[in-house]
Length: 186
Image 1: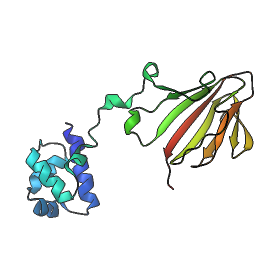
Image 2: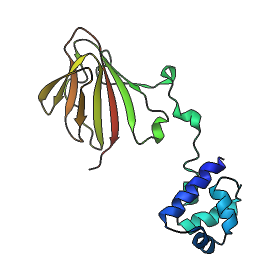
Image 3: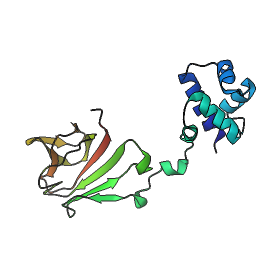
Image 4: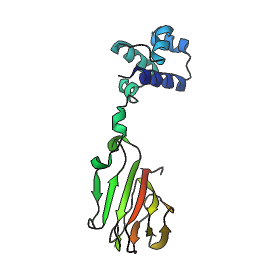
C-alpha cells in the first residue's frame, strides 16, 4: 500500500467536505496528530482507523484505495497491444493504445486503413461515446450522416454520440487515424 497516496486521498476527501483537521478529528474519533501523519503519508493506519476515516468521510472504505495505482499498469507496450477488427478485417485494424484499458474512462485507438478500403460497408455509431479522430498519416474521407468530408494529415473530426459515420481511404497509400473516445455527456 502506498501510504502517501492513501494520505492524499483522505486529505482530498476531507477538503471536499470542508472540514479542518480538528473538526475531522472530533467527527472521526481519531487524534489530529494521527490524521496529520496519515495525510502526509507518514503513518500506517490500522483497518479500524481506516474504517473510522471512511465513516467520517461518508465514503465506502474501498474508495480510500482507488488511487493506489500499480504504475506498471499505466504503460502500454506495442508488442502487447490488443487489436480490434471490424467487419472488414482485411483492410481495417485498430490497435488499442489505452493503458489499463478496462479501468480507463477514455479509449485511445489507432486505425490502419489500407488503400482503397473503408471501415465498414454501412455506418457505425456510438450511443454512449463521443469520438475525436486525428489523421496522423495520409488522407482519408469521413462520412458523417451521409455527407462526405476530405481530411488530410493533421485534420481532426469530432463525432458526437449517435452520429452515423465511417472512414474511407480512396488513395493508393495506407492511412493512420488516431481515435480518442470518451463517455458521452448526454
